[in-house]
Image (cartoon, rainbow, N blue to C red; front, side):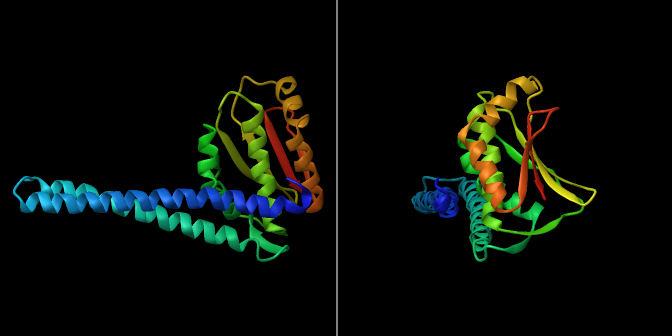
Length: 218
């Protein structure tokens, strides 16, 4: 992605993934409602005795997918509104949690689970919300694209001595600094991360004691 297209390309990629998920939700609801119609017809003709049990399963399926659809549309709506301003105060934990949630399909396609630790004292910062989320997304992709083992990735917000940062940890204890450092830093994604960080006063580092990327606010 070129610098001028970073934000729209990122917004488009996430939106396309979420709308694909929403289409799946609607397809399941449509299929299940059609199945319910079949059950009613079979029951009227006397070919179905356990209709209550079958309908109960259908209703549970529809309800589950309805909740999932609401969660997806709500997350996408919140994500879309982060593009309203190039400078805004954001809750770091809530912003990252939502981004991980709506990008889940993209991560799952690569066979990776991504999660964020609960934060007892959520921090807020003033920054470019879209670029901030893009940097976080690229840090996660940096691990996914450079390591064949599909370990889990966890995010942790760190705050100490008036310094706020995020730790992106690739949970694979077998990797040493000599293994993970060059794979991360020699790829084009790391160059992109560094470039974007400079635009919003962030610094990016590689942890020395574990396969992790550290992003700090200056």
